[in-house]
Image 1 (spheres, helix red, strand yellow):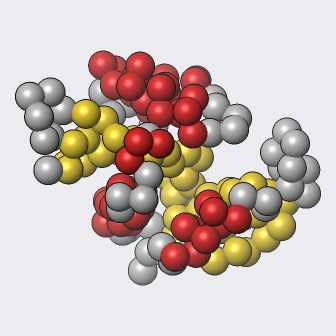
Image 2 (cartoon, rainbow, N blue to C red; image 1 turned 180 degrees about the vertical axis):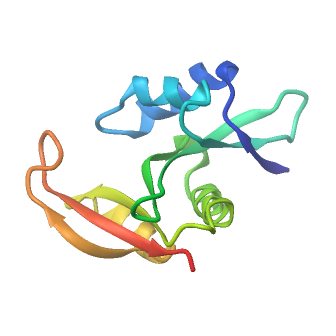
Length: 146
């Protein structure tokens, strides 16, 4: 049975394993901030056996001035891709941050799989970001929350 909970310091290594396995440009410092409570992060955990398994996470950076919550990272362990965990993390983030106007995130323009996922969960492209990533262009996406 999957559950959502706040990230904890003891999650750092499990999240780092997911981050390294799934992201082209991992930022361990972001995980440190997320697991120490400096910025909010939600962990999706599977509780099907004796020991719970972390299968994914989403990091949230609220900006009260723009009423936007930026999602610098969302990742699901490769062993759990296409099981609905990414969608559940986005939906949980939306419910958690409903006092804001929108979620925002950036995606590699060439990553059609990620783009299709984000569009399927309600994000729309709002801006092209030339040379945003180290090796490619990015896109800024928004999803309304209200």
